[in-house]
Image: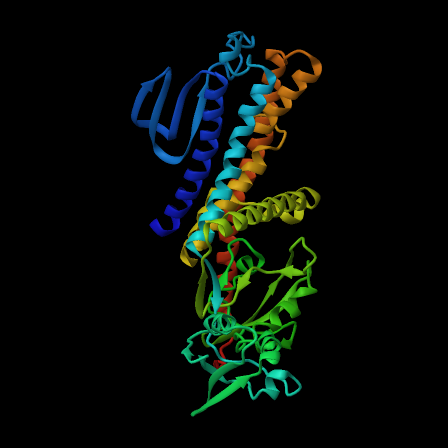
Length: 453
């Protein structure tokens, strides 16, 4: 339970705290009186009064909140008239800055996290340095390489994995021949790649293909709902046999929004399940949310300048992906609504990414920061986008909204956000229920002898 809950608490705690910290800092800079800044929710564990603000550490560590003077109408329905130090009577441009500061803080946090990922190291799947298919028409075949050869030395240095093999080859000057030693059965064979051939040879090599065994099932994706599990072997797609992992994207790519029959082997059992690949939104075909097992991991680290550049590019890509997902949600709400997730989904996904490694967990943290930023910028009442909308409307109209109008606006927002929140809260447990129902069906199928690895 701790492994499931703790990563989600950390993610939500950091994301919400950073968001509220942005509002707090900008409010202070603009001279708006902040009555309370709380890290966490609920009864206080500790509090102190400084400069008219109560700083509080609360029991429940899921983010926090900022309470500003004059952030709502008075009891008689009138708007605050305290001047610049109260939020709703503060100049409209300052209110825009205060509202923007929370989402901007999440954006900056996402960028810093992606920079840290580049510095700590980005992990990639690694493989044994064993060659996959080598067609007899290729330069690699003419150079003496064969399928199944295991590369054990490059330029006199031992190598133990696919990435170490490629990097050792890149380290040798390009105008020099490249000496390799491969194991073929019980033989050790020395080969030399000519300088003019080596780049083309190395570029055409592929590692030994992965078997079609599921290494990870992404929470909430079609494979998760259909009941696929880690360790399942996919034998066929719509009756067509599958022998290697690389066959799966080809078989599933053109099946978006159409049910696909998978023949699956789990232990000594074999059974059929139906899964409907979802559109990836990028024109690359359908996805069901599975990954191949990682036989090894290669970690690539970058210097500070490279990390800053990569962090910026990665953050821009995350922003694009999040807004693309929001557009898909708006354009096809019935299709994508079941993929919406709340706190339980975030906890599951955070735990899943934490198991994969520090870099995966940090990338998920950056993604949630961007998601919170994008959601809060929607022009809905009670969200930051709603405050921005009211402030801009005041600038256009030349006068602020009335207290009664403000209350009505907020009520509309409460209804919209409340319905959305209830839908998400209901969707989270239903996702788990559907998965458990799918998992329960599998053992009822017939038994066969296991397929060879």
